[in-house]
Image 1: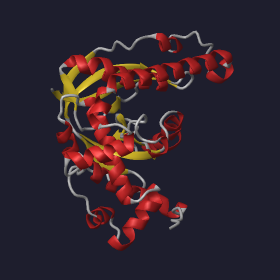
Image 2: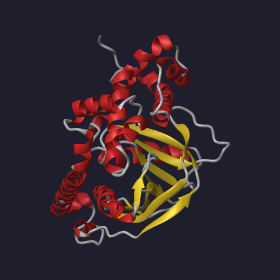
Image 3: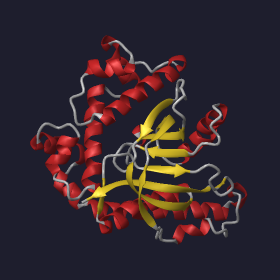
Image 4: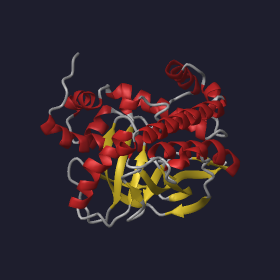
Length: 321
């Protein structure tokens, strides 16, 4: 059945409702998720919810749940190498290890154990790909200095060949109440445009320009299709703040995080995340848990529009092995 796209007039209102559903799914991914309960979260009738969800997401509710559970399992298998496969299967909502193994192999072409074993090589390939992208960006900047706003010889541009030997500290962070606007689509340049053209003007209009910001990438772009990746641009808000469509409000969980200072460009932060997971995490005696990875941007943090360089804190949720 062909499902027509949502009209522009409905999109903003539906975005807020559907984002609540996606957030609810992530918080209850280990539990049965029935259509009636999710329709209630979205404030739609159960009769219409399935069709509205498919129109907004481009896939049915059942397909989304299956995909989200498997992609989240793939992330956990890589980031939690000592957690039993069955425990991960149950944590993402599968009723048995056998059902999980069949579905995982159908989605990723390998068994869960083989996927986990191949993680170091996969991360090495992703890191090499990110570095090649950096080299291409640097080459373009050097050949087109008028467009890049630099002659390519500045310190920020020279970071592309540096290993990110970041100092990482384990800290306990408090929960943060945040308002967010969600971008669904490829990470990279489109995220920069989303911040500059959509989120930051909204933040100023709400009188929140002196509040710290967060960036949350909910999906691994090496696992999730680019057009389905979810990214939240967020700002810390007081208890009295009420979000209006299309923004939403949620709580970023507190707890133990591995925190590293970062300074560089968008492609370089991808390298930094990969190196933190590939090199620092296995040697740390820690493993990542199910809370979101995020970037923290203090008020008046460094940002250079001419070069695209910026500063933030990379925050990786961790727990002991």
